[in-house]
Image 1 (spheres, rainbow, N blue to C red):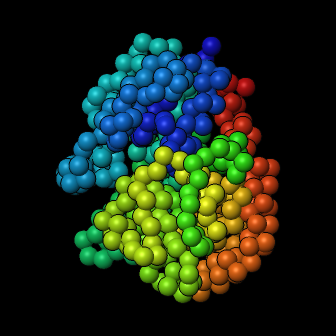
Image 2 (image 1 turned 135 degrees about the horizontal axis):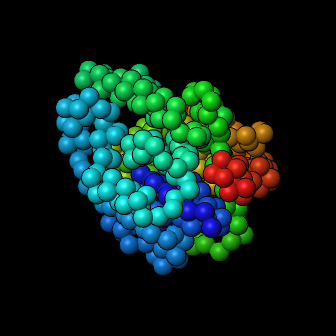
Length: 381
């Protein structure tokens, strides 16, 4: 049986946020075909000891806590002329763990998940697949466009240094993967391996804890200490929601930043972490994704579509999804107001749109089909 070393910036289980969902399904796909050894960071102490059903998926399992502060990572980056994204994930124990497994095990291939972890690739070694997921240099270049002063300088620096690093890595691995064709096009020679969706789990007919409330409910889901999500809900709560009378807005996701918590009020609910997001999605009259900055395929949109909810998304959030008109795309605040208000005023049309969205993801975004190309890339076919 082939042996694969899987290196990830965040332990891929439980699959309860966007990057962990993709990582988990890739890992599970590989474990059905090879013996997999995992080396990963955990930024949540609860993830340091995986549940038995997850631990059973892999052979060796090395999970390191990631406790380095942003300030320390920035100082190290400035001192070494490296991107902060790399120094933030530089750890001698992870380096030792990777070297140790490569020395002891007959590793046939290395799968690196997320660009920050490419620093652990050996100079020469087995076949290597680099799953960048998104092109981080492009993300920081976009951040720089909205920043000022020293922050803008640091974002531009990060974009420039990461771009050089990404090109160097792509030049020495066997394949570079991205989550969408649009992302893959940014680094010539790359391949798109799209995200999928578990339509059996995200199913309006599946059992979940219901959410009870009065009146129309607009829902946003996501990791709420992530800057694009923070900006999205802030924009919606302040500039769009006041123009939609009678509706409540639920911000559903873990670790809400202070500016997100400050939005809570009579019409805005900030839940923090929830055990099962499906209850909130099922209760939603409309699900929104008002992201001004988005890379690749948005899991939050696929999940809402799979739950047969009507979705209104920004152009950035919809760009990576082949939705075939089964979600509404709003170009600006006026577009969001018009689209959300129309769906709230016509529940039958909203139900029909949600049903079409579920049919679309069921037909188009099956994980098995999305990940099938990995077998050939890793020599498992």
